[in-house]
Structures are given as structure tokens and as C-alpha cells.
Amino acid sequence: MSHVASPIIAVRYQVFTRQGQALEMDPQLLSTWSALSEAEPHMLSVSKDELRSTLLFAVIATFGDEPIGFSGIFPARTKDGHQIVRDKHKLVEFGSAVVVEPWRGQHIGRMMLQIRQHHALNAGYWGVCVTTNPIVQDLLRDNGWEITNDLELKRDLCLCDPQPLHYCATCPLREDACWLLV
Image 1 (tube, rainbow, N blue to C red):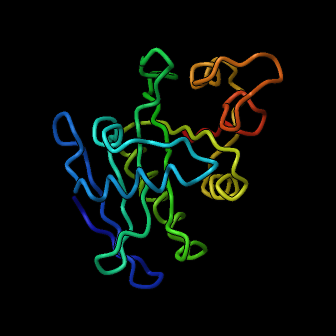
Image 2 (cartoon, rainbow, N blue to C red):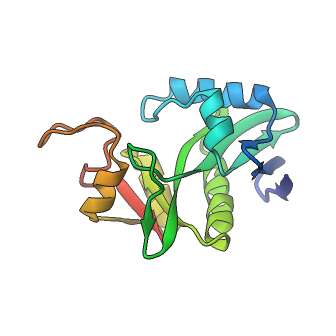
């Protein structure tokens, strides 16, 4: 675990990395994160066990002892569980990021994204993010991400079984939903 001080207010960012088979993190933090993901309409909910077993690393923003932001990086996998690779680079999903309501608009999500980008790119990963949230899309665009039209990648990331013109709200096959960082 490492710490990064924020130039904006007195927020501290903790970086948790995988140690062995599971992410070593306070179970209460994982429970809070899971509950927040369930409450966000634009997010896929993630259980505490999924977070612990699949996260490669996480960034948690805290104010004092209060967790106020959660974000992580997961291996990008197909529906069948296969790691997605492009041009010999493993892809990681930047997903399930959430900032607690009263703290939104304070650039906490931006800082968590930048910390995750730094760690992912230094580890040799390429990033992918599937989102239809315009605020998140602006954040990605401002930090060097681009919309991808790689149909094979979009199909690999798709969790639903879409019929033509029938996509779920978070479907990567939507024209503006799949973002790539290389």
C-alpha cells in the first residue's frame, strides 16, 4: 500500500496492490464499495468477493478516516473468462469507480483515474473503460483516452447477448461507450 497526497483539500489516496490470490484490503472498505456500486445506475454492481478476488489494484480516497472514493483496475476478460490481449499488451478495465455524493465535483475521480493510469501504464497494461456516463467520458477524454471502434474488442467486452440495435445501458457495442488508453 502506498499513499499519495492530494493538492486539492486534505484528501489522501491509498493504493492497494494484489498480494498473492486476493487483494489485501479491509473487508469493510470492500463492503462499502460494493454497496456504492449497487446504488449507481450507470455502473455494474460488484460484490465484495468479486472485488477481493479480481482487482489487480485499487485506489481509495479518504478524508481523515472516512473513505470518500473508490476505484480499481480489473483484468479485461471475455464473457468466457479469457484475458483480453491487443498487440501483445494485456488489457485492464478501469471500472467500478465511485465518489461518495457530497464529495463529487472536487476532482477526486480525476486524481484516482490519473493514479490508476500511472500504475497500469508502468506495469505495461493498456486500459479499457466501458461507460455511457457523459461525466466519465469527459474525464477520460481529458486524460488521453479515445473512443475505439475495434468491433472485435467491443464484442470481447460485451457481457450481454445483443441483438442488432438492442444493447444494454453499459454495452461496449454502443457507438460512444468503449474507450481505450494505450
